[in-house]
Amino acid sequence: MNPKVEMNMRIVKSRVNYLFIALFAISLVSCHNRKHENSTSLTGWSSKDKISRGFSDGTNYKGQQTPPGMVLIEGGTFTMGHVQDDVLFDWNTTPVDMQVRSFYMDETEVTNSEYLFYLEWLSQVYPSSEEQNKHIYKSALPDTLVWRHTLGANELLTENYLRHPSYADYPVVGVSWLQATNYCKWRSNIIAEKVLMDKGILNDIYSDDSLKVDGNNHFDIATYLVNPYALYEGDSSAYKKGLPVARKKGQERASRDEFSGRHVKISDGIVPTKFRLPSEAEWEYAAKAYVENREYNNIRGRKKYAWSGKYTRNKSTKFKGDQMANFKQGRGDYSGVAGWSNDGGDITMPIRSYDPNAYGLYDMSGNVAEWVSDVYRPIIDTDANDFNYYRGNVFTKPMIDEEGKVVIVDYETLEYDTLTNGKIIPKDLPGSVKYIPITKRDAYMRNNYEKSYNIDTRDGDLASTKLYDKDEDELAVKPRMYNSPITPSNIGESGLRIQEYDDQVRTTLISNESRVYKGGSWKDREFWLDPAQRRHLPEYMATSFIGFRCATDKLGPMTYDKRKRTTEKIR
Image (cartoon, rainbow, N blue to C red; front, side):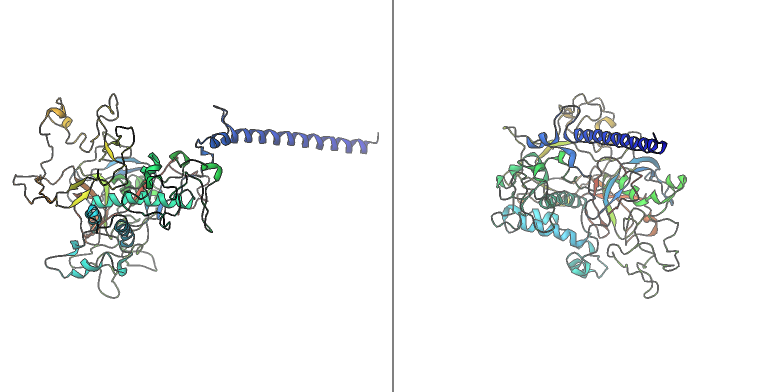
């Protein structure tokens, strides 16, 4: 045979062999992918089989979405309580090493306009004109009288700061810790409601003439998850068992195969996580933003403000000399001299007036101080826990009635509480799930907790005293570690607290109702701008210089894949 012809035949045969091998490999990969997509190695059930029989399936989960108005705070280790100017030499800010989990946090403080949306929603759902609602709306109103001073002309602020559009983008103040916490609960519901409406799982209940959103009839995410038929008494015009509804142009719609014939569950990955106040450890970690540092010593606590550097004035060429935050610069000096050195901040300032820190958070030093979720104690007890530290846990569970159903609060079971300052607040809102403390039976034989109320664990509870061997039920009066004032709780016929005063000698204001607030404000000197500084007030009090922002947990891995981090957009 001609050598040239023989050579060509060998080349053809070789290419055919390569082609066969490639096709065989592709078929194996395809079979493997189909097997992986349609069934699991443990049960053999395909995703299609699961969905058609009403079981949830996580194959369509696209990952947790960044909540609106928030940024991701990638967790890590840092030195908590490491202040740079410790002129008092007290134990209040003892440095401790702490690990913080990843979480999401608001870019800015909650503004007047955002809080007014909450108030308007309450006024429509629980109109004060009805006797049964008269305390609900009032309990959420900020105290606008915090602007008053016996020797100051600030009456204009008491009348306009909250509602006038000139202050719409200013941080809301006059809000107590309790009010801020209730706002976070409401935000959990209103965001979850919007997500389910955008997915086509809920109808637009606000535009449906057959439904009236009031009283018990409003969306509550906890109620939806435990018993969707408790919402709107099972009215199908509010939702259709998860069946997608007609969508408007641009509206996202869930897959019909995914939710056909059933309601959404947590395992579907659609329901957003609950919103809350950040813990003290989270807030301080986010404010310091060590993510911008590249030296290990700096990461361990050598940072004075939310920005890099030791000074409060900008050093860049374009903005040299400008203040980096809104704070009181000296006695009688809140904004600087008019004209060339005026920063425009005599009181609070609009959000985003200054540059954000390395995490993209605005005003973590200055403008307003902010509530965090922790109960105040002079010392952070890291001997007990150095991982995501938080003091304030009260473990609860849904209340179950005699029929074995979860109890939903209605007007007949609605309870009110009278605070120390005499204000009346609802313990729960109608339409929400009723929660009760866990019992000793629920905690039986556990090694991580023993009871429901853990606020004073290792620092004021029975086990911390000389009566540690006694049972709480045996004592008529529980011992107190902190000798804080006790306001008599005599309630009159009208439901208001009778004004009486504690006439005993008291040595401290620290109590289980004292909550931490962090950060400096427009009314504070530079000393308080250090994120490690900490102060406290009773949870029912409000001031003209304390606001708040919300946080929520990040699910899954604490960080994005480092190989993809450059392409990940943090919104």
